[in-house]
Length: 239
Image 1 (tube, helix red, strand yellow):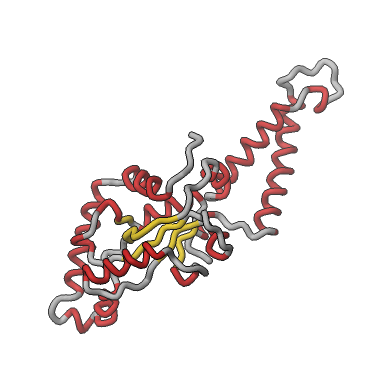
Image 2 (image 1 turned 45 degrees about the horizontal axis):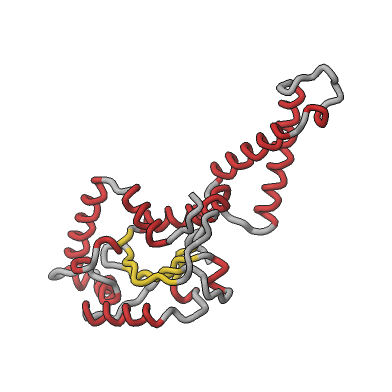
């Protein structure tokens, strides 16, 4: 529970957790569709896409364990409040090991790979941090992403906990309600009413709960809007 979070292990866990049999069928359909685009007369019709194919990886000879769908990457970004951005958004040099692996992939597939994506915490894209946890991916012909290299220290164990309220509106609402309930239950009776006959579970406590819920909801809304804190499910790809 209190173990540090490894991005690669978390990606693999989410990949297995969200795997469905229909994903295999969809994957095969995508492969057939992609193959059909670059055959015969279709090459001229889809010339732009054909030219772009020389910058994307062919999954045929790649290790499937390192291939992730956009759906899995989105889930990990929402779960840990991470960003999945173009490598141009990364203001620092990638490690030398990553460059070597990219060169190996270029030589292996005879391509000049482009369109790299980097997964990591938002602040670390713009602020130098030697221990920041990142992972770099290359796009494949079938719309997936291949994990090339990861670096940095693991994420703190509480990352999931702090990221939960801002995953989406539903998680935020649940968090506010639970926090309000906790505060309400922690208040001694003499602080919520002057009625000496009132018991712990009384109508006064219910009234306090709703008053605090309105207050905390308003404060949360002000914080999110005032400090520009969008939900993770809508901002995971935004700079």
